[in-house]
Length: 115
Length: 115
Image 1 (cartoon, rainbow over the protein chains, first blue to last red):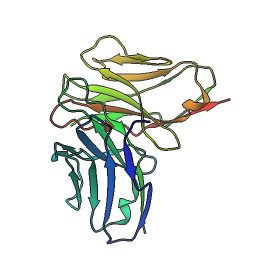
Image 2: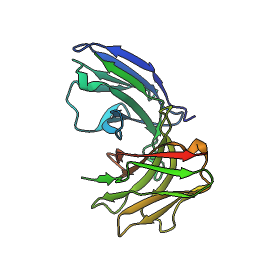
Image 3: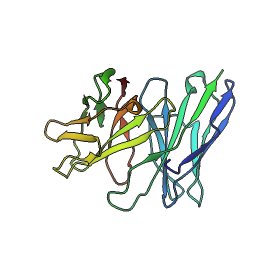
């Protein structure tokens, strides 16, 4: 167990809807990263949050947005869902600011299906 | 941009035998980390081992060890005394620490351990 939790575990939405996924980071960690993993592929970086600010973003459109809260938990929001958004969404927490401590630990993921 | 290549899509090994999973990467950075993550069918991504590029000594964690060849940009994972619980997808990943410490993953390799 990594101490990183995600909710919900599964979600079914229809095209055009909006979804919010949640992540609680490991105790003592201050950074949360979000990844999208299509079936049979490696995870793709969506964005990272550090001290409640976006700290880097991958090649994802603006309808993917996020938040980080003072307790370092985080949300991923996706607007105007498309069929291709169907994937496993992983969050990972880490500790930025201490050399050698930026290893990312993953939560169990949220499986999103868009119909 | 960094890239990570895992050219073997699948491998199979007999229980108690040794198997090596290959990974190459491309980067112009000098300070970086390399990781192997394991993702069983239960889907939670689990850290297997980490290697800092500035360390010449290869990392070892129990039955897992790496062969890190910095000049060749190669980072292979050796699993000794394979166990049925090692059956999973294995991902090689790259990260530069600091401002944008995202993980760049390879496509993964499916490892099956036969009884």
